[in-house]
Length: 329
Image (cartoon, rainbow, N blue to C red; front, side, top):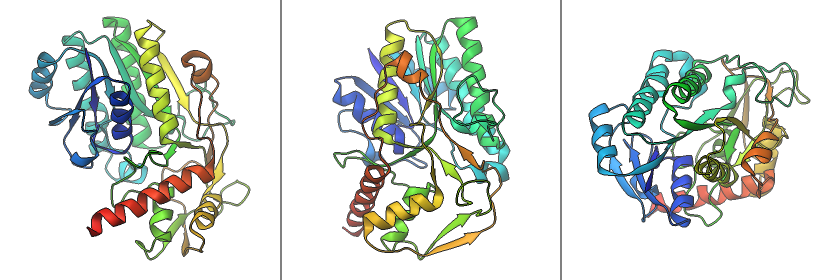
């Protein structure tokens, strides 16, 4: 049996492929390479270049392999872009996920792990926010992911598809062995942007909103190291293989850091100040969101090992240096 990883040439997906191949799993990566990189795919995995919304391609791929699980990362992830292009996000994140899900049901693949997001919560009334909170997304990105969660729930009821949807908080950092990291040149992740600015790859960085109801006026987020996030995916796969219950799980540490605190951590790691422009708020950004993450520990058995902002920033900065050397070669 093997595992199908969609979006496995991208940031988080490539880390999942590394974890699976490290564990001796047979892995097939499905990626259209629109934002991913062929070189980011672990050498032991097979790369099938194609689109997750291509039904004919999916049917052939699933007929050629005996998959026992699909791990679905492929999708669009930029909140402001989803506000300006909502239909594009509903196509890429919702419609194409429905196509993938239907193909998995037809092929009788029993397990499905989905890359969801804390954006389904919108502006939660209380922090930390737990899975029992009523979803109230404030961006098409969050809504597109929530709709896929609903489809998984209903496919589970109707067809017996076992699933875990992991609601990510803010993912950052890079593989501790230096094998993968956030490689998209113009990615909007705060820590990546701050690291690029520190290394002179950007002239400055923008901070959107300094008048939020937070300790320093900037947005507060729960940052999770990508390796810990992937450990939760591996735990989810083991859980489903043991016939564990389907459901949704938050993935975060339960501690928030402001935008300015993150910038200070990058400056500390780099040893120099970086130029910051303070701008107006950005559409779709909640003021603060922090994970209530007891369920993932209690049910999936997740035990984070990298829950430290300085460690996250240090690994991200090291990866940016690596990319700079790679691009210069």
